[in-house]
Amino acid sequence: MADDPYKILGVPRDATDQQIRAAYRKLAKKHHPDLNPGDKAAEEAFKSASAANELLSDPEKRARYDRGEIDASGAERAPPGFRQGPGGGAGGFGGGNFEDLFASMFEQRGRPSGPARGGDARYALTADFLEAVNGATKRLILPDGQTLDVKIPHGTSDGDVLRLRGRGQPGRAGGQPGDALIEISVAPHKFFRREGQNIRMDLPISLHEAVLGGKITLPTPAGPVALSIKPHSDSGTEMRLRGRGVPAHGHLHAGDLLVKLRITIGPADEKLETFLKDWPQPGFDPRAGMTA
Image 1 (cartoon, rainbow, N blue to C red):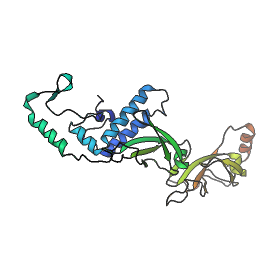
Image 2: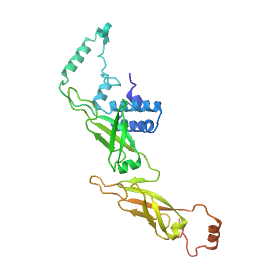
Image 3: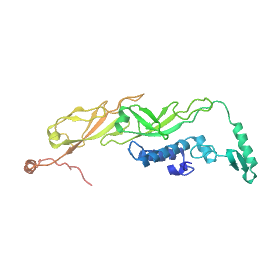
Image 4: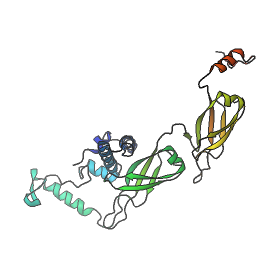
């Protein structure tokens, strides 16, 4: 029998949908097989978290679990007082709970027996920063070991939920299957930062490039481009590359790449030190106007 899904996710029994979703995302990021290759313990923890989230994120299943009608694996529980006799048949009724049995029988008879749509299944998937910006196809490993190839549209944001129609729980009595709802977590990049449709980055340049200017090769989400540095560029100068941010999608236009220059001295040789000692840069005070 599966463990208590509330304990697996580490949430109280009165947890909100948002708390359940946040707890699942945290565990999914920690134990995802893509981030823990060959780690069987992490794989099992990921499967347990996914199964727990699948049950608790479905309002009907969660309510039935809380009432004791199904167990943590989603299997039906026997009615109160019912015990199985030899050969799998009905045994006695502990405590004379005939009323509980009849109530359960009438409840089952009262449920619709025709076709019914299957429930939605919820999963979490981590995408790299550039995969979310440029679009990609990622493989999602389901709790039962099966896989789904998920197409991540370009411009996907952290927390976006993708819907794969018909890839959820099977329907009942020929009903349509539910959908798979996949929440995307975007991993941070080592130097790109997203702000809406724009992307920001700090660009290290040498003292030589800052003073004399020049052309450099700049990495962008869509590939390298040539960038001209103007002579006498200060650290903190911001440059805008239009249309080089998040690509346009839907009703949103393409964003820009905002580049902030950061002067990096690097190794200072004797010639540079001697030059600076003999050149005090007269008339210039970088801290002019700074008064408390």
